Image (cartoon, rainbow, N blue to C red; front, side):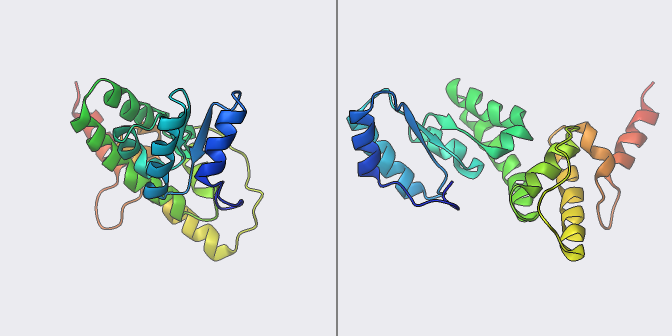
Length: 191
């Protein structure tokens, strides 16, 4: 995790992949696309079977376009369906759908990242999906808890827009009708 460790130089990755055949890949979570591309370029010339993964959702589709192998992403625990859809649509050549889904999840990823200290936003997102991640072990001030609640309501709306109806009940929009109310109105109209 780049937040907690020093960056491994590309030359070290190359040398390790050559000297230690059991090392089969690397994950780059730096959010640094030029660095990722440099690693990709060096490693494709060094060892074709070496997997190069990205660790940030925001650039999953662009890294696939440039020859990356996929990602190991925190959001996969919250929204595995759209993340897998990006990968599958890419593999089948449906690039318009990849772009559409990539942009759709960007807003949700941003909300999860902004919702407090990592991984609190992802825990909140998982709870909205019906998972029970348990209580946080990180201390939070009253202000931080209120902000997390606001962000969780925003995430609920974004999840509902992505088709995850279990989150709709917690969607609270300011200045308008919330998603849960809209869904209830639609249900009443159905025969």
